[in-house]
Image (cartoon, rainbow, N blue to C red; front, side, top):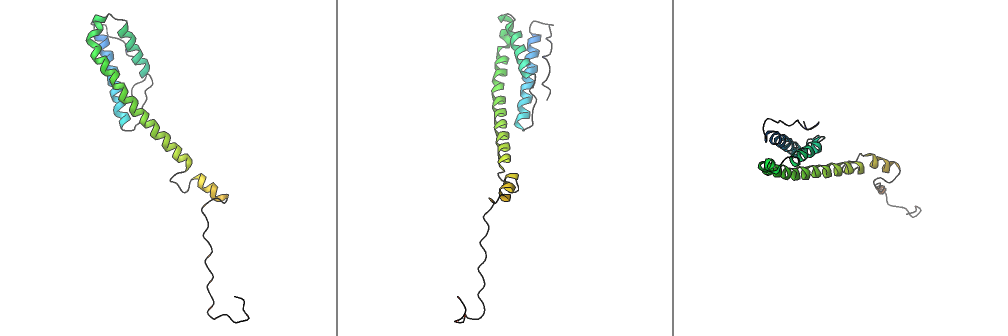
Length: 145
């Protein structure tokens, strides 16, 4: 995922060009992160916080009249962060539970925990010995019964 590094430089070719391009780039990066997160692919979010912070700082440093046309897209960007956070949280919980299950040996009869328990005699309960087969002849009065 290409989300690392510093924010792209602002394009000062017009009063709205730099901020509009920055919003578009960050929005695109968040949307791509969401798509990848939904497939379960590990994603690299390094640099995203810095990009969002730089975008917010750039917006706050400009006059309100210049930023007003971009407020809707900024709001959409903020709204797109919530589903991404929820997806990443769900992935984290799933991975954490899978690791915990693996460490506990659940579902794996050959896990180290099961092998160790069996080695120290706390494994499955041994089956009782089979009853002896009676002899073919009836007992005589001399034989103990």
